[in-house]
Amino acid sequence: MKTLGGRVRGLLPWLVVVVLIAGAVGGYYYYQQVRAEQARVAEVAALRTEIVQLGDITALVSATGSILPAQQSSLFFTLPGTVAGVFVESGDAVHTGQLLARVDDTALRLAVQQAQDAVTVAGITRDQLLVGPAEGDVAVAQANLRSANARLSDLQAGAGDEETAIAQLRYDNLLADYQALNNQYNSLVQFAADNPRFAPPQSTLDSLKTNMESAYYASEVARLQVAQTQQGGGAGPVAVAYAQIVQARAVLSQTLAGATDLQIEQAQLSVTQAQTALDRAKLRLTQTELRAPFSGLVGSVGLKVGEPARATTPAVVLLDVTTFHLDVTVDEVDVAQLTSGQAVSITVDALPGALLRGHVERIAPTAMTVGGLVSYSVRLALDDGAADLRAGMSATAEIVVAEAHTVVLVPNWAIRRDRRTGQAYASLQQGEALVEVPITTGLRGEAYTEVVSGVAAGDVAAVTTARDTLDILGGG
Image (cartoon, rainbow, N blue to C red; front, side):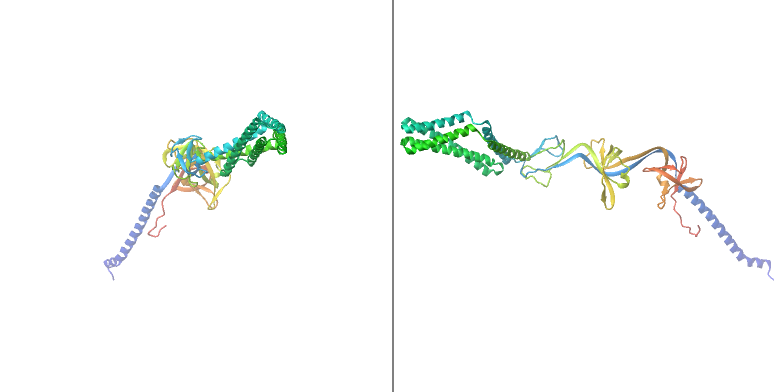
């Protein structure tokens, strides 16, 4: 029979086990309580909250681009040539029509002068036809006829020394007239051969040739008259004298009749053709000069005196910096919110302290598709500018597309939208719990969204930023 002490000694291991188990259970529950308290404290610390208030909201569409001047023009020489002068430098202010550069124009100036001479010749020929026979021409023709008649009478009566001298003088004068016309005709033909682009019309040459040939025949007749007076009368000289009378009468009749309508029309056409050639020569001369098409600043100069003007490199780049604009692209979703005249705020990367104002000037009617993305070109006009603003600076524009005043504003971080249904939810703190309530949204800004229903001013928007922790004991 065991004693009491022996029984106690037999139960002692079991008592130790029970004590250990009880201690472990108590420690576990204590750990759970501490952990729960720590979780509650961490959750409270990680809770992001904000009281919902009434306020104003502005919906914006943002876009980026480069600052551009009102006009930018790359100017080229349209004629090849050697640069004879460059009269501006980069940064110079110029006015409309100011001479910027010039290529050598020696050959073209000579061409203009030759074309002007051709116009003068054609005009004189036409004017002579229009005014009709001059009194002097009629008098000469009449005198020639009288002289022919007198010559016949002299032949019939016999010529003296005085008549022979007179015939010689007349021949000398007519020969001189012929030689002058011959020199004029040959010079004009040579000019036409050397300058085919500025050659006088063929009708002018033909008319001059006809006058030259008439002068030649007249001088030959006069020469025969001299010979006849020297030889005295006879059947041959008398026949020639009769022929001279017929010719003199024909010349007088033609002189009195004046030019025909066809001759006048041809002469006028010659003047028109010569004037056209002159205008063309003057136009080419103006193309040797490069002048400013508008007032502005010289952006760059690509010329050097003595070098050829290149057709591939702009001679001068001219900028009109009286106003600036910004060309941006806006996607098809946002462009539906834009209209002309909407206010624009513009910030320039190079001018961090400057906030520029502008407005939507125009929206392209057709879209651009790049990589499957549809967008539209939008021009934003600057209403003001900064003193340091330069063409080409990078800028960001914010376009005000809508505004709402005194509305319920919920921070964007507290709003979630179900992608499947499209329903929006706001996360609110109600007591110690976080709940999501369905809402109807209005305008969305950068930080806040207008909530039309589901949330009231004074509600607390809240979300937790705590992450789930791993239970090392396998608990929940």
